[in-house]
Image (cartoon, rainbow, N blue to C red):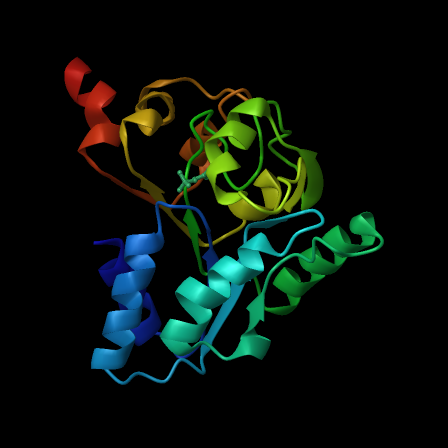
Length: 225
Ligand code: PGA
């Protein structure tokens, strides 16, 4: 469903800036997007991408994006953007990244996952809703959820992430949630009050958000309705 949603945006636009997410949740979407782009033999020269985040001192999400998205789907390399976690001056890198998004004319459709703790991007609980791209210290909840990806490489404890203010400027947002572990965060998103401790609740203040959640992620909502 998510792949169809994103693919129809790609098909119907002369030029599109996609904000993309990593993690387990969007993998199925990327697999289907790759299938569609082959089936339709669609040129993707009008697609530009900006990623939400990257670890400091790592290229883990660069590798993920090349392996799962850019190479199989065929998005020209120079039209893809990911924060540089190896930048010598991280503050400068955050400013550069904001400028990249501005120069592209902003994000048309931002795809988001959601953390077990309600984070969006790597904006952990307590992040200012007006924040711009910045360096974060990851919480224990996020470190433990992502520990499985770092068997050989030591897991970084910091990351660069688009800020919540940056994300909110996207024209449209598609949030994907999968699995029981996300049920609490999804419940808070729909039923909770605006709360910096559950960053995703801020999406209630965006005019164009679509949520696609599987049965596990919806389970607490369904129990209550
Ligand atoms: P996941 O990560 O898709 O791997 O669960 C989502 C997130 O932490 O935002």
